[in-house]
Structures are given as structure tokens and as C-alpha cells.
Length: 555
Image (cartoon, rainbow, N blue to C red; front, top):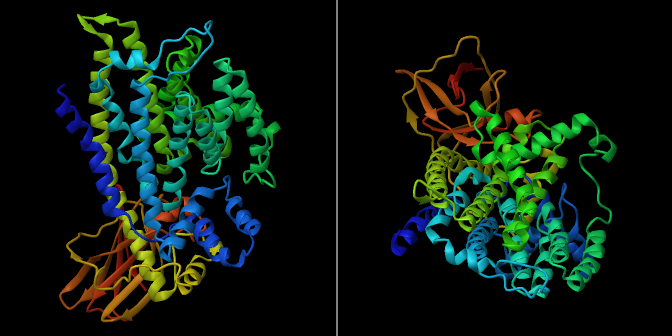
């Protein structure tokens, strides 16, 4: 492939991804942004001493200490006077771009490490010179696709879930470029990004032990032990699971199912629920093979990155041991799965290139790369087509929350125990949050032609929270779902009875994390902004949820 054409092919997924992030990024908090970022910024003014501020930064949030996300928000306020939740989304984008660049460099550039003479090694440069850049093209289509759409647009997650593996890769890369001090510093920062960031310092220790670099291993260990003790000081395990419970046969089997399903989650589809487990199991076997052939001597950066990613999957499985395997398919985890598959692909490609095996007169590495490229391009296209509607809905739910908060003092996309509306109002009253004003006209519902019907045996469950006249519009807001079915980004329409018959209108989507069964009912929220209607008008609701439909007159 010509170099110019190669750059164009690589730029397509990158520019598409970056363009959508810049277009759909929205300045409003969501879910855990409230207890992490909003709460931190509200409490910060009362923390007068450096120790008090450090305590707020290091405070545990669920399983993590999300220092970097809080620090980004703090710096944002210090520089501009207010927090812009898009900044964290942009940081996540930059971190992903950095990850892709480091992967490319790790596959082609030399580690250049001084090793004892008895420590044989083939440098990464050798493999890089023999491997054409075109063969690494699938990496772009794996990393820059929107199965992990939530990671790109959820502020706190963008600033933590994406930066943790980016910093892990940077630390490992620096460690294998004779930048040991920088590597340790980056690894220490990674400790305070996300839960899996705690793995980076121990991995540096292991890497230097494998390379017989005893002084660096010992020095890093002396930093790692107090750093981890400091990290876990006063730590509470939210799962409440005891290690003795985890070691039961039933839990170990479930742990393996969770781990393998997570590692292979990039190919998940309900119709082939077994496929991620099969793929994840294959990557574990491959990692064991890499250890057996001592791939750490051939490309230590990719090898230890894979170790980090496998341990990340194991950490998630332990933390989610009480859930079924569906939890590991959540969008916010799939950036790790995509990176894991990209790194695995590069190691397989490297091994095939080194073996230089032919098949039908063509190198096996070329056959493999061509097959994977076709698969990843298809995966990229299907994923982006499938998840674009969810990206649009995610921006819409933030817009709706902004509207409901500014006009009616309500926020739906956060658990009510965090008091999101009042906490965000406190932040806004201090001038530390300046959201974009949202008008009813800008979000006005559109009249549509639908044929409301109900699938056999189904009925509609609903609740109305707001039904009022506002600036010439009838605002109807609440939740609705096909009873007994799990809601999944429902299409909800509000019908108004007129002299000419029923006229249905589109509604804004939002989530209802205040519902008791939020795991199944969070996607049930709707808000209709209907022109020329009155609160006394007869209304109807019509919901489409996948293949199921239900309608109901509203009292």
C-alpha cells in the first residue's frame, strides 16, 4: 500500500472519531460526575489548608480514587472561573490519540535497553523494520470505533478510564526507552486515575526483574509499597466480598466467565453470547504462549501492556463478581477491550513476521493482517452505525437534564441520594458552573405520523411527573415502558387528541436513574414539549422498545 494511501486509510477512523467527540460533547454532568466532580468542587472552597485540599482530592469514590478527574476540573475552574464538563471529554480524546501513537511506536521503534550480556534479546526495532506499516492498520479501526461511546462523552469516565491505560502504556514505553525516572513518575500519576492504575508500578517492578535490572526493580519497589499503602489507607471495599468467598469453586468459575467475557467483549452480540468468552479465552492462551516464548525479551512494551490489560480484566471480574456477565459488556469498559485486542493483534503479527512462515506463496503474516483488516473495518462500520443513535441520545439526555434543571429544578440522570439538582445549583450559584441556556423552542417536539399498536400480551407502564403549560408549550415529562420488558433506549411518543383526531409528537430521551430498578428501567425517561396544547387535553403514550410496542391513554 502506498504511503499516502496508508495515511488516508488510517486517518478515516481517527478523524471520524475525533469529529464526533467534538460535535456531540456537551457541557453537563451525568451520573457519577455529581458525587465525584460536582461534590468536590462544592466542598473545595471550605478546604482552607493544603492538607484539606489533598484529602478531598484523594477521597475514595466507589472502588477508585479519581484524583486526575477532580484535578482537571479544579484546574479548569482556576483558569476560567468555571468548570466545563467537555474539557474532560477532550482529555479522554487526547489520551486515546496518545495511546494509538504509542502503540505504533511500540510496534516499530527500539527499546534500546542496556541489558547484561547473558540476557539475549531481539530489539523491537528489528521487528519494526520488517513489518510494514500497512499491517498495523487494523489498530486504528479497533481503537477508534464507538462500541465504547459512553467513554468518549461521559466526562469523569473520559478523564479516568481512557487516561489510565494511556499512562500505563506511556510508563511501560518509557521504562523500555531508558527513561526510568520518567516511567516511575508517570506510573505514580496512573495510580490516581482509575482503579487499574494501581497496577502500573508493580508491572514496572516485574518488568525490571524479568530484565535482571535489580537496582531499578528494588528502587521502584521501595516507591511502590508506600504508594500503595497510602492509596489503600482508609479504603472501603464497596462490594463487601471476602477473599474466602472469592475462593469458592462457584465464584472462581464465575470469575473466569466474567474475565473472558470482558476480554472478548468487542465481539459481543446477544445472538452469540458465547463468542466473547471464546475469544477472551483464546487471548489468555495466547498470553501464556507469549510468556513461554519469553516475548518480554522481544518486545517488552507490548508484552507488559498485555499483562496490564489482562490484570485489568481480572480486577473488573473481582469487583463485579456478584453480577452476571452482561455487566462486562457495558460501553464504559470496551475501550480496554479494544486496546487489548489491538495489542494482542500486534503481538500475533510480530510473531508471524519473525517466523516468516509462507502459505500459498504469501507470508502468513500478510494473510493474517489482511483478514483482520477486513474484519476490523467491518466491525468499525457496524459499530459506528449501530451506536450513533446512542451517541445522539446521550447528548439529548444531557440537554433534557439541563432543561429540566434550569426550568423545574429536576435532574433525572443521577441517583437521587446524591441530591444532584441542589448540588449543581450550589455550584452554579457560586459561578463555578455556567451552563448553556436551553430554550423550549430549541427542543420543541416534532409532529410525526405513527400507527400506535400493542404487541400481543403487552401493556404500558408509565408515570407522569410534569404536565404543565410553559411559554406556549405543553410540557409532559415522566417515564414509560412496555411492562415487564427491559427498556433499551425506547422511542416514546406523546399523542394529543385534536378536533381532527390524534396527533403524535416526538419526545426528548432522558434516563431515570431515580427509579428503583434503574438497571432495567433507566432508559424509560421522556419529555415532550408540545405546541398549541393544554394540560386539560386528552393525552396518550406510545412506546416502541425493540420489537415490542404498547400504548395507553393518560389520565
